[in-house]
Length: 196
Ligand SMILES: C[S@@+](CC[C@H](N)C(=O)[O-])C[C@H]1O[C@@H](n2cnc3c(N)ncnc32)[C@H](O)[C@@H]1O
Image (cartoon, rainbow, N blue to C red; front, top):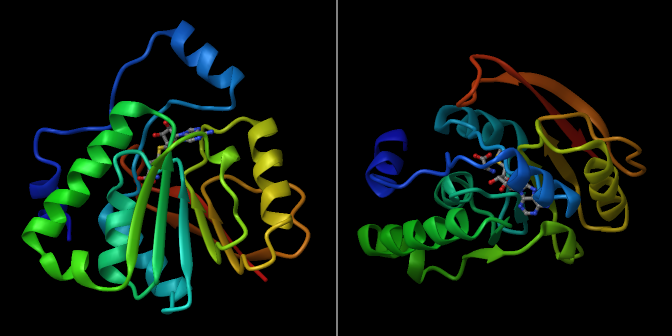
C-alpha cells in the first residue's frame, strides 16, 4: 500500500507552509491548517481493529490530500467513504489522486462503492448517514472538538469515532481503546477509539 500511494502522490504533498496570519484567520473559522498524516501501516492497523463492513459509511474530517480515504476504500468493504477538506490545494490533490487510482486500478472506480472528496469546512457537513468517523485532530482547537462532539451526538448512525485527541462530552459513544500509532510526525502518537 505504501509503495502504491507513493506512486500515486509522486510530486504532490499536503505539507504546505502558511504564515501565522493565514493560520490565525483560518482558525477563526475553525479550520486548523497544520498538516500531518497517519502512515499506511497505521491505517491498516486501525482497520484491523474496527472491522468495517459493507454497511459502513466512513468519514475523514480534514482529509488532507486523501491518502487515508483512498486506503480505507481499497482496504475495507465500506460502501461509502467521504473525505472533507477545507484547503483548496489539498482537496484538489485528493481529487487528482483518486482519478489516478481509477486509471491504475479501474476496479475501484467501477464498483458500486463510492469515494467522495468535498472541499468545505466539515462543520457544514450533515453527519446523519455516517457510521464511522475519523479525525486526525491533534491540532484541532477545543471549541472545534466540542462542535464535532455535538454533531456526533446528533448523528444516530455513528457507531465508531476515532480521534488523535480525546473527544469531549460524547453521549452515546464511550472510550473502547487508547492505542499508540506511528504518524508522519511521531514514532508513537495516542489514538482514541470510541464505540457505541
Ligand atoms: C492533520 S491533517 C490530516 C490529514 C489526513 N486526514 C490524515 O490523517 O492523513 C488535518 C487536515 O484537516 C484540515 N482541516 C482542519 N480543520 C478543518 C475544518 N474545519 N474543515 C475541513 N478541513 C479541516 C486541514 O487543512 C488538514 O489538511
